Structure formats: C-alpha cells, structure tokens
Length: 107
Image (tube, rainbow, N blue to C red; front, top):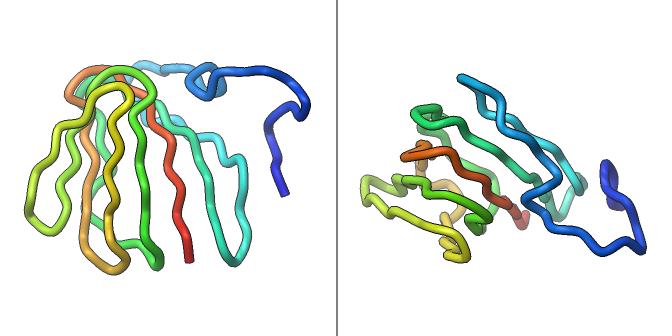
C-alpha cells in the first residue's frame, strides 16, 4: 500500500520532499481507490490553482506557512495546523512562504 517511503523506520514527513526553486514538488505515499496521501513542498509564491477533489481532502502544514482558499474563504495555516477541504468544493493552495504539507484525500 505505501510506496516511496521506508517501512519500519523512524522519520519526519517533512524530510521526504525537498524544496526546488520556482516549483511545487510532490511525492505520493499512498494511492488507491479509497485514499491518497501525498507530501508537497511549495516554493514561496508558487501555487496549485483552483480545482475540486473527488473526496474530502485533509491538509496538515508540516513546515512554513500556506494559504488555502476553499469555496471562496481564505485560511492561512502554519506548522502543525490542519484544514479539511470538503469534496467537490473548489479550492486552491498558495505558498505565502516556502512550506511543506501532507495531503490525505478520502474517497
């Protein structure tokens, strides 16, 4: 089920993906018909434009600060904070500064 990650090893999720200048970088850890788990890094000023997901999406900021727009409402999250973005509601993600996040989508 898990991929791109060592098993039976203590780790920090934020260390699984590096920052790259001018880019959003992602690493998928789980992908199946019920759940998707991905770690992202955003360079400052980078974004994922407005889209909707086919399941409820939970984001947790692992490092830095990101801005999440969900159904027109804006949320700024910092390390350790979590937000649920409901299924089929348009949302976007923007790097207020360099930041990393974990995304879990439940279908």
